[in-house]
Amino acid sequence: MNIEHLKSLPILYAGFPSPADDYIQPDLDFNALLKPRPNSTIPYRINGDSMIDAFIPHNSIAIVDRSITPKNNSIVAVTLDGENFIKHLVKTTEGNFLLPANKKYKAIKLNEDMDVKIWGTVTHVIIDVMNSKP
Amino acid sequence: MIALIDCNNFYVSCERVFQPELIGKPLVVLSNNDGCAIARSEEAKALGVKMGTPIFMIKELVQKHNIQIRSSNYTLYGDISKRVMNIIKSFSTKVEVYSIDEIFVDFSEFKYHDLEALGKAIKQSVEQFTSIPVSVGMAPTKTLAKMANRYAKKTKREVGVHIAGTKELITQMLQFTEVGDVWGIGHQYAKMLLQNGFKTAAELIAAPEEWIRKNMSVVGQRTLNELKGLPCIKWEEEPPAKKNICTSRSFGKVLTDKKEIQKALAAHTATCAAKLRKANICARRLHVFVQTNPFRKDDEQYFSDITIELTVATSSTHELIKFAMKAFDKIFKQGYNYHKAGVMVLDLIPASQIQLGIFDTRDRAKEASLMKALDTTNKSYGKDMVRYGVQGYSRDWKLRAEYLSKCYTTKFDQLMILKAM
Image (cartoon, rainbow over all chains, first blue to last red; front, side, top):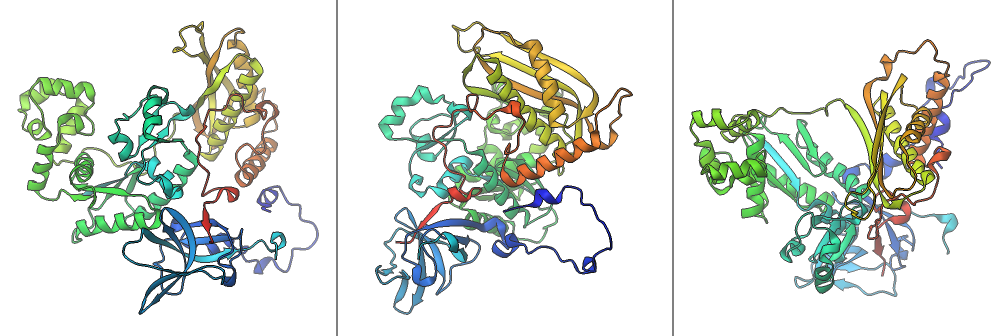
């Protein structure tokens, strides 16, 4: 919960100045942590359990940065036949694959005929632990 | 060299970023209140949907070809525009954001750069980071840069970049462009030029001095000089100081009840007040208007407005709403089908220059603190989360937006979904 608005009300000081005054640092900035390049970063909602072995459960939020060129072994956002997915990209000498992180799902081998576009790299995942079902 | 970079079919492109099923399909984005087509995809253009067509007039065409419709989602468009502009600004600091989807960039310091490569790099960056396709036109003046941008769209859309850097290339562009398609030459002016035998921009710049002096206005001559390669249009790096702030909307449906219209006016006043505070200015005059719909021929017509002077300039929501309601009392008449209402604040001065009246008894310091708390809270929780009672909560006056897409970049409960399947 953002309590910034409370800070704008006048504060009454009484007694001694705090010894901590000289050591105050700025608050932890979660925006800077999760979006160091805000112009190319957008959060997405994960729907489904194909990535649970990569610690990305259903209903979590994946932060995707489009300015990072998708590399081997990264978790990526990809459009396949007009639908958007989250997958594990693996590049091998046998070819490039989009893998799930859950034994229930199948791997996809990429080839030229496919309508596929890998457009972003997942940098962080936000999981609401208190409200997640195990 | 100056570049004009703009987004191709911006609103349509924004919708397609988060709804990939719309790619390749005919798509139309509607104006406020779901009225007219203000953006069309290439497929919709090919089906004959013209800019500004009221949607009710093309119902059959929409059904026959399954044309997709979206209401304008300015929250989304504004957010994506900010990203596009920021990405372009990383290439050069001397820029002028001209509209929500157009930006001029001054590359005159980039004398030894390969401008074509630079233009392509900018296009590639914007498209990779945001999915928004852009076109880049570069030339010695703003008017020619706009022309180069259009030339890129018309003759090499895939490449999307055109650098009119030599006399030959500029001439080629001038010969290609008709006078009516030159930036700064409106419909009526173009008609006059055609009547006088000028069909292309190339023919126009060859006009004799005598003729120009006799027949073209100052603005026309400025455009002409720009076409000849002489920069005449100023750079506006800072938007000019506001002369007035106006908020007005048509109602989603006709309103006859005074209380409902008051809610709308109070909301518009609150918006104006917040804008005043954000720009650190105050208003000395307040203008309120209300009107019926002149296109509803069966309705009795009524239009009234009033301007009141405020003894002390203010940006306080509380004060402005109080005066707006008083002003509205004077102009409201029972029995009409009202269609639109608005508030304008005028005579704006910096907040630091307010002169208090001798009869002024308001506790302005306390009010300033209250406004600061109001603005900070609404910034965190959303517009009008904290509002004045008279604004109300009903949506009777709000605009129709039946085909609105989600706020994919500004609401956690409306994020785009990535399937983990």
